[in-house]
Amino acid sequence: MNTTIRLQREPFDAALEARKLTGGRTDIGAVVTFTGVCRADEGGEPIAALTLEHYPGMAEAEIARHVEKAIARWPLLGVTVIHRFGRIAPGEDIVLVITASSHRQAAFAAAEFLMDYLKTRAPFWKQVEKRGGKSWVEAKASDDSAAERWSEPKPARRDAAQ
Amino acid sequence: MNTTIRLQREPFDAALEARKLTGGRTDIGAVVTFTGVCRADEGGEPIAALTLEHYPGMAEAEIARHVEKAIARWPLLGVTVIHRFGRIAPGEDIVLVITASSHRQAAFAAAEFLMDYLKTRAPFWKQVEKRGGKSWVEAKASDDSAAERWSEPKPARRDAAQ
Amino acid sequence: MKLRYFAWVRERIGKAEEDLDPPASVATVADLVAWLAQQGEGYAYAFENPNVIRAAIDKSHVHADARIAGAGEVALFPPMTGG
Amino acid sequence: MKLRYFAWVRERIGKAEEDLDPPASVATVADLVAWLAQQGEGYAYAFENPNVIRAAIDKSHVHADARIAGAGEVALFPPMTGG
Image (tube, rainbow over all chains, first blue to last red; front, side):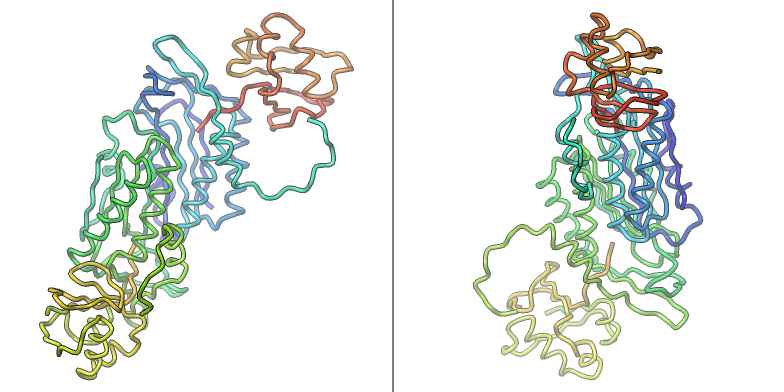
């Protein structure tokens, strides 16, 4: 299993990462690449840039945990996750997920699963610079429900608190 | 809407195609790239190569029709479909689908939809070269059911024949 | 009427295309496949199992009950395996 | 116990981390948040709506009812917006 997880300030090269994942192999039949890009607007208003804050150490661990979950769930032959932090301008890439498998359904499902989890569980926070100043992006209920659909049924909780 | 549909004998450059689709734009937030690769085995047996036959004219038209369906169904900002024909060696790319949208769900769904349809409705046929000679790849029931899930409910047919 | 064959249908018949004028009784794609199956050994082999044969009229998919009157080009082929 | 704050929790409190020893009555993450909210204006603002606060103990997500005894590092932050 070829697994790469990286957090970095600098841009990444999606094509290079895909070549590193698949190069020289002939058992891979399907490669899905997701690239998340910084848009020039947020909530209908133009933005100058966004800044991504993260929790070093925890971010890597959370991503690794979800990559392990994906590997346990689908017959994958390779996974790459790269997430940038720091200041990112519109048009620049933010996040890269690449999944490789012998068949396409596994590659698609694992890439979607990883993106849904990155959106809701990986400790990153986006701040946008708008004309009126800086503001923190609010979490979306639609992202929570996208992540929910991957949950396995849980045993009933014994404690009622929280 | 940036749409590219191409059938070609020569290899394609997925990274170049992605750049052509997204370059200079800041309204795209999500890019999904699917690459189908020739594996070195088919049904558990090693293969030397595969040869893709297609129905010129109809293949382009069928792909274009499904790209239009995808555009009508999801808020896409760009779609690229490139399908190779002729002889393809293990490790070489066969097909490329790129979808761009402002949000990831649309890009993922449209790319899966297009791949499911290419597998079952686009007039291409794969022949593999194995040790024992050449043979045609059989269509998979799993591909048919993958394509079925995108069908809108149809009015009952009036004619009972076939 | 122009007929086109692909993949193992083409291989079994031994040609990629031909011009044929089926009799007036051949009204649908299913009729055409049944009629072709009687045109010789290669045809009989190609169409030995009519249920797996897929068809297009003028480059659009059609069902076996589609009428062929007015068709410029009818293509017959196995289930597709692209992608 | 080391406390770490992120995003607007960090901004409102005015620091990214600090070492604090909450009283023994502070048993859970929810208790900790309620206690911190009383430590000054910035804290009160950061924790004005405890329901939106997310927490991690030693870099793993926990619920508000998680016990903090033995924790080396407790992090408090808003819902995440990565990806």
